[in-house]
Structures are given as C-alpha cells and as structure tokens.
Length: 99
Image (cartoon, rainbow, N blue to C red; front, side, top):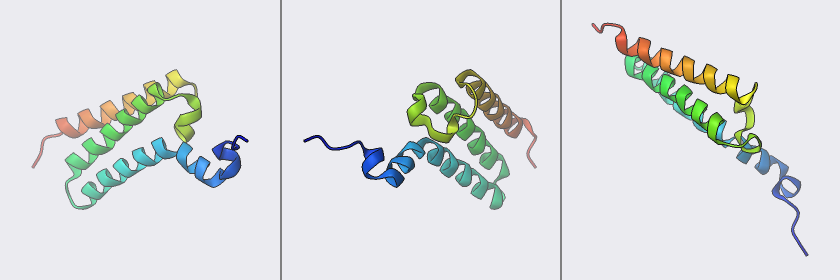
C-alpha cells in the first residue's frame, strides 16, 4: 500500500514547505530592515538588496512547483526585475557618501 502524497495528507504543511524560498527571502529582508531601524541604514539596505538578488537566483534555479509565491510573472521577467532592484539598491546604498 502506497502512502498518498504530502499535499493530500497534510495540506497546510505542504503549503508551508512550498513557501520556504519566500520565507527565507522575507527573513533576510526583515534582518536588513532591523539594521536600518538601529541606524545602520547602509548595511541594512545592502542586506535588503542582496536578499532581492538571492530571490532572483531562487526564482531562476528552482522549478515552478517549488518556488511558491516568488513566481508572480514569467520566470524571465521575475528574475530580471528582482535582480535589477537588488543590484540597484545595493549600488545606491554603497555609493552614497557616509557621514
């Protein structure tokens, strides 16, 4: 007798596992925003930018059934937009003169 797949046995757990890439990105973004809150704005924005680049890599490398809500548009559009936002945010944070 074979066991039914996880999404049939435990739909909540299967849904949570499917959203792990998004959860990982959100945890890194939250860490960056926490740095911004404690007046380390430059490093906080770099962390948020790198989280966006990481989201682009996850979207590029993971299959659609594993990427969860990181898949909003087509793969190419998602990767280009996430990578551009991440690189731009990181570059701007690093090029603004410090005080």
